[in-house]
Every structure is written in structure tokens, then in C-alpha cells.
Length: 440
Image (cartoon, rainbow, N blue to C red; front, side, top):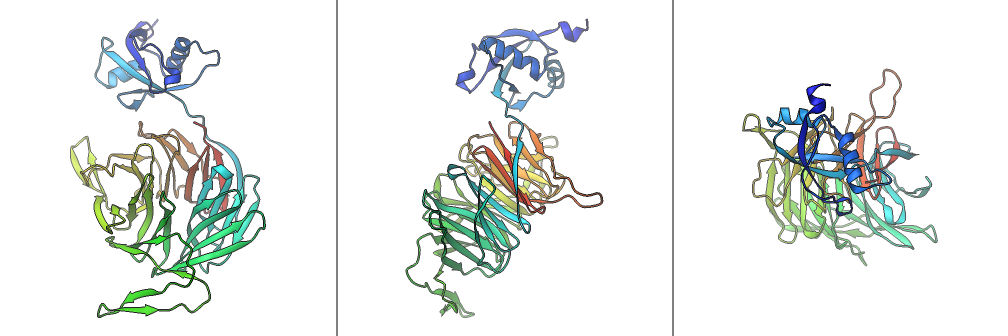
């Protein structure tokens, strides 16, 4: 019998999940134990008839070795008392279904309460799907690829949604479930380049759009009773009117936020504060805005703190998708340097990234937080994979593999992910809306 097999270490088990709490007094366990053996001990202490799989954290990081290996790597001895936090393991995501599109899928948003999915595509169409795989409705009024979609309101009788397009417009749609009628409620005009992103505030009273014209525009969600008139500034900074040339009701922006230098890739509202808006752009920055005051209150620049050298490293890479967690209050951002970065918008320090997650092999254009966990998020990449992360560890928990392609063909890129309810939705270059279960 080896020394590791007989060596014991004193541990104390703690958890934030009250239903799995055990007495947190210190006990001796074999130092050779890994995750499975520790899970057996906790289930024994709980007296579980149906064992529950657990993950274990020491000093905020998941244990992926034996206890003895951890102690050796941390420069500790078996005489140290080790506090181990345990959490219920997430089940591996499993494929549920996939819905075929005619062209690349640029955006997907789920609505779990009514089991609906909203997609935008490079074929210029917006589609509503149900969980049976039926395309409930198709909206065809855009004249260029749709880059982003968002739900505005959904109830038992109708759904209202928004779509942003390369045709420089945002359209508001309404679909009636009973009559199967669809209507363009209004068209938002004012951007001078492709509209890349649209986000609705928590009150549903306003929404924001981000464009390649370097601006963010704020719009009210109210339906205009008549055409609203746009105003533009001429070279002498005098305001003059511009009038519509078609019959569709148009809407003017309530305000314009300027500050980004180059295209704005993504916008998202604070999950609980309609006055706080976050954006990411090609100028390598994540910006925080006061919507009411129209002020860029903080700019997070792309630098990393290398803990090994204690140096600040510049990261001059485009910010693509961003997402805000209602639970942790953190921002996640996907980048052209294959990484996912986490930011704390409440922190005064504007230079240091809170955490950098590295595993993808190509650009990361899209991220989405779990709707129920402060720690879990999903990212999608041009490498064709989606990765699930628990931010208490720097390694992905699971990887949803890239779809198989014919020999000699390139991997199909993932452009969009959305974690809605117990489902992870993804779409991209393979023209498939893919749905995976994601039960916590």
C-alpha cells in the first residue's frame, strides 16, 4: 500500500446550498480522494438514498486532482485543515432538437414562459418558432441581413419583437397567435450604417441599438400615432428636417450616445437598472452609460493583470458580444483574441479585467449568462463550439462540440448563443438553430 493510500487530511465541508448542508466540523479523509470519492462522503453524511453528484472548490477553484496533489501544488501539508465548498454538479448539456434555416443564423432569443424562439438570419428574415419545431411566423420586410433580434412583449394573445438589420433600420413587429396576423408597428430610422445589436431595458419602455456608425441610439417602445420627423445637423450645425419617402410609420431616436471610436458591436441594459447601459466595440473598450444623462460614465479598456509577472498587459482586440448577469452583476464579453473576459461595472478600476477565460481557438462573438446562476455562462465561437463556464474555475465545465463537416470543409462558425430557462440555443454558419438542455 502506497503512502498516498494511507495518508489522511483534515477537511471541513461547507456549502451555500442549504438543502445539502452537513455539519461543518472537521473530519479526516484519505488524501488520495478526488471528486468522486468526496462526493460519496458528502452523500453518506447527507444519508442520501439517491446519490447527488457534487463538485468541490478550494479557495474558489474547482478541485480537478486528488487532495494530495492539490496540497503539493499549493505548498501545503496534510497537517493543514482544508475547507472544501461543495456544489451540486450541472448535468452535461444534451441535444434536444435543431431547426433548419435557409441561411446563416445571426441571432436567437428564447422566451421560456411561452416556449418560443426568435431568430434573425442572413436571408433577411425574422422567424418565430415553437418547441415543436414549427415556424409560427416569418417577417420579411428587411432588405438586408438581420443582425440581432429581441423580444419586447409576449402574452397569451400576441408577441411583439424587434429586429436590427444591415439595412440600417430597426423594425418593431407584432404577431397575433389567434388570427395569425402580423404587422410592422414602426420602423426606427437614423443610423447611418448596419445596426448590429438591439437591447430592451427592464421596464420595456425603451430599447437601445448599436451600429457600425459608432453610435448608440435610445428609442421609446411606444407605437407612434403618426410619422415622426428626423432631424439632422448640416455642416453649419443647424438642424434641418428629413422626411420619409414611404408609407410606413417611422420613429425617431429619443437620444444618441457618442463615445466609441469605430463600430459598436453590442449593447445590453443592466438587468435591474433601466438607466444603466453597457456597450462593447471595435475600439477595444467596454463602456458604461448613464442613459438619462447621456453620459459615458466609465470606460473599461482592454488590459489584463498577469499575476505571474505582476504586470499590466495590453489587449488590443475587438469586443464582440457582451452580456450582463442579474445575479453576479458582472459583465461578460467575447473577443477577437479567442477569450471571454469578465468585468465588474461597479469597480472603480477601469483597467484590470476581473477574469479571463481561455479555451476557444477562434474569435468569440457571443456570450450569455445562465438565468438562474451567478457563476454559469455560455460562449459561442468561430471554432464551431459552445463552451459552458463556471467562473469559479478558469477551465470550461463542458464543451458542446462543433457539428460534423465533410472532409476538407472548414468548421461552421457559431454566431449566437442564448441561455434561456433550461435551454441553450445556438446558431450560426451551419444554418441550424440548435437546442440543448441545460439543467442545473
